[in-house]
Length: 206
Length: 206
Image (cartoon, rainbow over all chains, first blue to last red; front, top):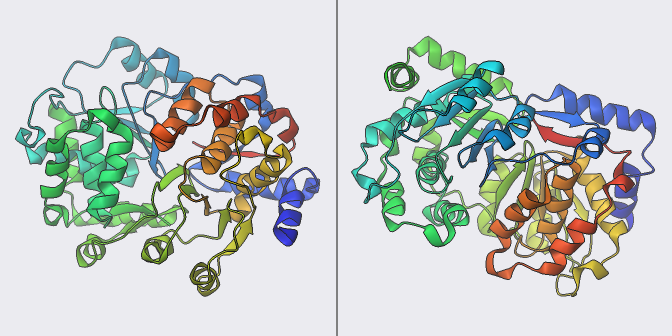
């Protein structure tokens, strides 16, 4: 591994203090990321992300329904908005968390039990994507109840907007839905007309 | 959904041109993201991410072994580095791709078949994390062969450094390894001593 190994070693324990400072400065200068001194994780190793939590893109996250145990972790994400896809009223504890942290809630009621999913008005998904694609709402967390179906459909449509082939979109969908995958969700994603979204910009990691 | 719906609608088809311009400007101003005009995805809807591709954090990606079909997608990520965990010589086509796009390769040979994984020198994983944690190497793609075991262990140790509880770290590991999950990988992650990494900064979305 020669050179790479040396580079890694340099970046690791043998890295000079000034190089570390430089790396931390660059990390802190990047919106969406900051350099977390490890003493933080050593002092507190119990951040609990919501179930099925994942990074969708820079400044965009997905998960199941956040509960109190997840609030400390979510605070670390410095969220500007949360987009909930469940029709039920948002829980008091969650509303309190939003207010205390200046997080805006976008609430779209989509029935998670309705089958086939394609019966859901495409217009709502387009409105959801309008919020998701608007980086002025980022960092943004999209969630439903389990982070599998409704969230999976929204992210699937987003990937379609990003130009992903269906095979890759479906692979990602299955990674979260696993044995709960629904053909009706996949069909909804396949049929979703991105031409109807043509006036919106789409975020894309680069 | 009243207000939210109105907001979404505003962000969607009814958004004023100047608001769109503002959103695009903000998107372009954010390192790690840019606003992709949809005509791009409408002109070309066949980006093929590598198998098991996912965003780990802002500027940090994971996947299985990239092949030629994935190069056009990877170009969109504007990678600065690729970290390969397979011991085999890097394929000619991949080396050509790296050279043509000014991407640096960090190559660490870890035998993917060796069981138990814990037999692998922890020092190599520490060196790998040294490269992964150094944002000067970002955007960075970590990959092995299938993006399940070796990559899963590296990301698992990274999450440990970020303070995630083991339950969440294991949930993420299983999402990628599925039925191929290895108890030896989980044990390796659980036993990994992050105190040995204390001099390194850790990236963390915020």
